[in-house]
Amino acid sequence: MTELGPRDTGQVRRRRVFYIPGFDPLQTRRYRQFYRQEGPRQAAISGYALEVGAKPAGLAHGWSVTAQIDGEEVRAEVEVLAWADIISGSMRRTIAATYGQMLRTAFIYVASGALFRLGRLRKGPTLAALYPVVMLSLQAVLAALAGWAVGRGLVALLPGPFGIALGLPAGLALGWAVLRLFQRADRRFLAYYLMHDYAFSAGHWGAYPPQLDARMAEFGARIRAALEGEVDEVLVVGHSSGAILGVTILADLLRAGLPGRGAVLSFLTLGQVVPMVSFLPEAKRLRADLAYLSAQDEVTWVDVTAPGDGCAFALCDPVAVTGVAPAGKRWPLVMSCAFTRTFSPERWRKMRFRWFRLHFQYMCAFDRPGDYDYFRITAGPLTLGARYRGRAPSKSRIERPLSGHRSLA
Image 1 (cartoon, rainbow, N blue to C red):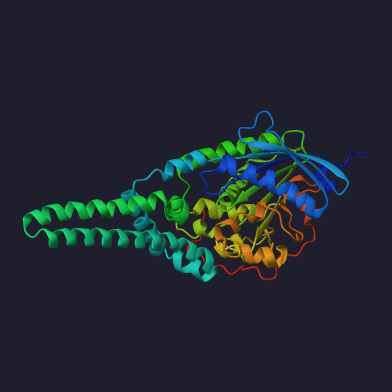
Image 2: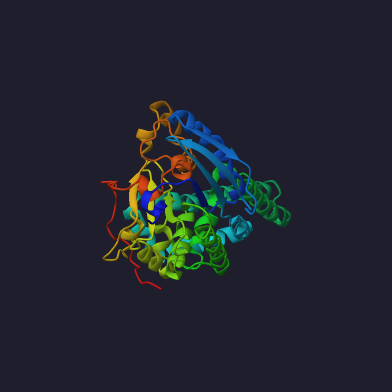
């Protein structure tokens, strides 16, 4: 008699988790800190045990987890598939180069028609995309006014050629100093950071940069090696723009063929921003990967967002809204972890305007967790497919195809 495996039972004792961060230069620190702080907190709220351990041998960035959930002991290894070096390299821009990025990125989204279509999809992330343009423009105006005021004052105090000779460079120097001050204070404003983010996504009109393409191939090789190992489930988690990378990495793996007796493959996307790229004209490969992955039965794909997350395309089916849903579409299962229900009223009042922090809430503890619990998913005794088997998608999901560009690679 053939022994039943995790594909049949949905049971997990050992799991490998691959976490793909979004556009974040702090990838190697932020997420382990989240897990170490929020995991035990969620366990205390929900009544199970979870312990975060040291980084396992062979992992560049990651940690181990031991959990006792629903009477079962589970061990997991979490690895962060970091691409922070690529991000940091793209952010090393002068002030003038950043303003050049702003003009080019705005032109790409406007000329392609993507900006207007994204606005019809969800206002929140579209406004978030406009924020760095508005903020950087405002900073430039304030710098120009400060420089003009000083230059004009010197010319008034010192009439004649000497006043002009002194006032012009003094005004330019002050204007530049104001811009430098804003750049150094960007941890508060996030204008430069977000501008670099959108510019990176749009830099090739939606196509993957060669450096990122090569890194995704390396990530795929690590995931394949885990699928061939002694684990029950390999769970790939893509957050924000990391969900975009995950779609292509898994589509390539499935095209190449999975190991015959390997682990169950699962895909969880959190706070995804797929339309920001899939709506661009040269995102042909991404659109092809979305269409392909959505019809495969060798993977379970669950997409979790929340309307309270203004930086994500909440409840937007990334395949359907891109207009590439095939006839046999199975995935993703679109569901909400609505913050208004999963936070206590007191905590929601404190958190509701912390937009950037809410974009990372998916990896944190909830006061009133419903059927979404990040730590049960990553360290619990059920595969992703078994956990959500029979679960209906959110009734308020958006599936209307709005992309003006639907050609495939």
